[in-house]
Image (cartoon, rainbow, N blue to C red; front, side, top):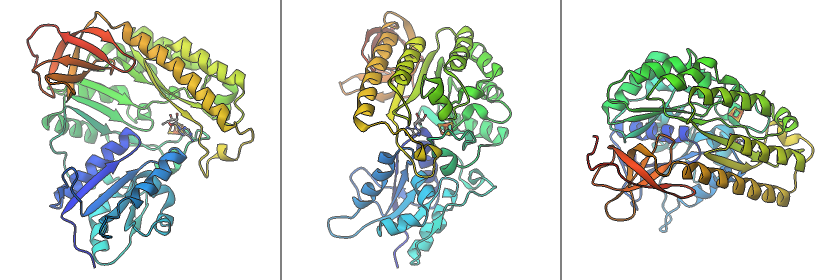
Length: 435
Ligand code: 5AD
Ligand code: SF4
């Protein structure tokens, strides 16, 4: 028998949707009367909200579990949540005796019940993907920071051949339009000035992501809207047009391409070519000329030859990404690519990743440099390290350092004075804070 926990800690890894899920789990545990453990304090319940996207991330889940045993031999109640939980289910319990419960991303509304089962001596597993969504069973949103995430769509029907998401997050499903608008309103009531709409394929939102953005843009007090992550095949003309029409929609688009080589894109089952991707971006830039483009890349997909990789570098140059994430291909059990021939040697992958990242860094520095001398508005989201220094986000999602008496959540007008690879320096345009 274990006691019902009084304190909790939720640790989220991986994507922004996990951050969102982690917040909702924390709210759920809070609604049960538990309090968040302070920094450095032992928690009675630790929820590890894990990521399965690449092997390294998945293995990290287990090493983190191992670290939860305390020096005196005691341990918290350990909940394995997120995509590793979904992928491994009951198996996870045999991999580590420290794990008390396993809960998947579509079942975490049941976390309090499951913790109660653990207290009675059980070791429950719930990786169901029920037709009725968890969202209805979650408590209302509470106070949030200036920039909030909001899941509007989950899952993926695209089945890129390298990706575990269709298996861990399930089929594409959109939340009801009205529910999302209501949650956006409550986030703004709770202090949010920026909302990022989330989905594994957010632009496949039923009812049209452009319509949703238009509805949310009507909320007073909401200043900025973003969305991530998108599939090129779902960039509808209406969504592209929205970028030119809705002021609150920020000039930033994360549109993963993965590779610039058509044979590799075909083997990845991406349903676009390098050319069709570039055409889509052309339309986006016509609608919103100053838009910052961000992307995801995989190097070393099975069968990737040097000329395929050269095509990836070429598309990087053609697009001029403002920012990007790049990864070495990781074979994931159960995915079609895991059994494909033509494995790329690890040292070749390393070399390609390095060359790709160097090229991407040149482009992001160039993008940042192009903003020097410009006036812009930032949303302050954290303190800097120096006294009086604050950090805020530009419309193009750059971090801007500025000396100001403004507080977190303020919008501040700045002039950009300096560009670094991953951030900008700025000075106040005038001393007035636009609160
Ligand atoms: N190996 C490497 N990277 C991957 N991604 C998804 N699956 C894999 C994999 N098996 C990358 C893709 C995706 C991002 C979220 O993670 O680039 O867009
Ligand atoms: Fe994975 Fe492809 Fe779906 Fe993205 S679109 S989640 S990469 S299967």
